[in-house]
Length: 241
Image (cartoon, rainbow, N blue to C red):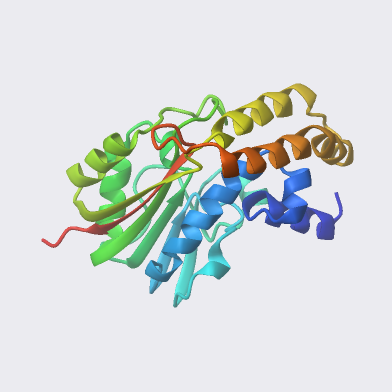
């Protein structure tokens, strides 16, 4: 896939617009995540650490003095991701109170010991600093075998409180019929995937686009369900000591 097309695809994978409606089988989920992160963007400030940064898809949403990407040290991550610092998945390689804000988007479900992970976030945050977390609630197993958990809003709030955070804001994304449409798209995505990227995009346009459009239309006329949703987006502050 040529660089320009790849960059366009990556943009519409994480921040889907009209193009994403036709080429992104995860359009509904990613649109919901992007909108919720955008709403919280004014809280992301100062020196920022993005844990599990990947492509850093949301970096330009934030007005910060420095943006540091942290990634697991694997050959694949070094080749494909935009990490600035690589580590072994244990202790963050930073001094105490090094950052004003920390982001961990779609990472916590891949952490087997979430309490340890959050304690590291707490350690490297400056007093009063904030953390932005996103986690899936209704989603299939992914990145196997490193997929360890799903969190309810109550479970995530409890976990944050137990690890030194307060002033917690929780948002449930896509709490409506689009959850079911997105799951159907996930199912079809795995059935029709192919190694050829061009064929893959054409196939997604044929199968995914009609479902995305139907889901958007149905969400306008059917009632919401706050107990059935795709992701949780949370922002919390380090508790005053």
